[in-house]
Length: 476
Image 1 (cartoon, helix red, strand yellow):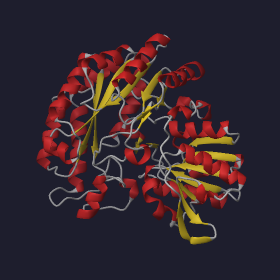
Image 2 (image 1 turned 45 degrees about the vertical axis):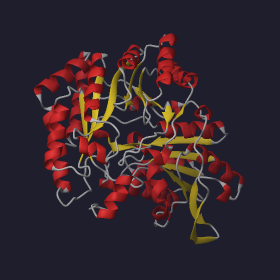
Image 3 (image 1 turned 180 degrees about the horizontal axis):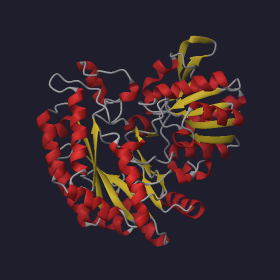
Image 4 (image 1 turned 90 degrees about the horizontal axis):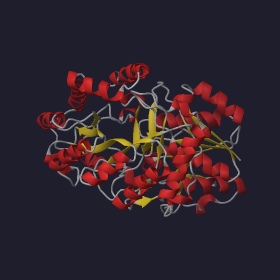
C-alpha cells in the first residue's frame, strides 16, 4: 500500500507544534518539534513493506493547495493524520479534502489525544473521517494498514473507532488496545522521511531531534491529558535501544542536539544513571535537554546529567501558591519548586519553568503571588500557559460541570488563550495576566542580558535569536 503520514497545515497559516500532549503555536517557543511519532510510524510501516511518505505541512507546505499537489503525486491508499485539540477542525478538513480531491478510494485515519476522547463527534461530522485511532497509536496503525491491505474485518482490530460500513448509522468501537509493554519493539525513527534542517533550536539555530525514552506517568495532575495516550504505568526503553537511536542520529543526520521527550524523565534513578553512563562511555559529544518533576531530583543525579551533556532541565512548577498546587493534585510543594531550581543551578544547568495561570482557585491575587514567586527563582526561561481544560482531563470534567467553558472553538484551546470563565475571574483577565507576566519577565534587563550571555555563543547566532524573539513576541 501507499501510505501518507500527514501533519496538516492550518488554514490560518499558523505553524503548530503537535505531538502527543504537546500542542502550541511555533511562536510560543520559537521552534517546531521534530515529529517523532509520525516518523516512528512511517519507519514501522515501511519496514512492513509499505511505500510511505511523510508530510509535515507545518514546515513543508503552508497551504492546502501545495499539500494536495504533493499528495496527488504520491497517490496514497491510506492517509494517517496527526491531530491535536487546537487543530482538530483543520485536521478533519484535511481528511475531507483528501477524500474529495485525491484518488479514490482513499482511506483516512486520525490519531492523537483529542481523537481518542472525542471520536464520536469526529466520526459523526461531515468531514468524512474513516477511522479514529484510540490511544497509543503505533501498533493500531500497523494492524489497520495490514487489515486494509488484506481486506480483513477490522472489528477485531483493537484501538479503533469507525462507522460500520454495512450500517453507517452505527458506530463501532473495538476493544481497548493494551499499551506496548516492550518499547524496544518500536523501530529507531528514520529521519530521512523529513528534512531535519527544518527542526532547529531557537537562539542558537542548532539542528535538534526528539528522543522518546519512556512513556507513562503515575501522577494524576488534573490538567494533564498524557495518561490518555500513554497510560499511568511508566515504561522504559532499554538504554541500548536509545543509544542506538542517538548514534544513528549523529552519524546519519549530523544531529548532536536532542530533546528527551517524555512525561517524566528523572523518575527512575537507576535508568537515568545507566543512560548517562552510556553517553559518557560512547564518546559522543552531544547536548541535550530533559524534564523532571521537582520532587524527583537530587544533587547527585543533576550533576550526572550535566556531565553527560544535558545543559537544560524543565520543571512543571505550575503555581507559586500551595493551595493551587493542592487543587490540581500536583503532589508537591512550593518549597520543592524552589529547591529543585537551586539544585539544578548548582549543578550548572539552565532551568526552564512551566507555569499555568487561571487554574481553579486562582484570583488576580494568587496569579500575582505566582509571578512574584517565579521572579524570585532565578530561572533562565519561563513559559506561562493559560489553563486549558483539555478533553479527557479532570479539569475538563470540572469545568463542564460548573459551566466555566466559554468557547467551543477548538482553535482557542491552547496556551495563548483562556477558555475558562470563573465567577470571580474571567478569561480576558487570565490572558492579560499571562501576557503581562511574560513581557515583564523577558523585558527585564537582567533576564534579557543573561539569556544573551548564556546562549549567544557565536556572532552568527544573533540572527536566529532575533527571529526567535520576534516569533515569541507575536504571542504575548
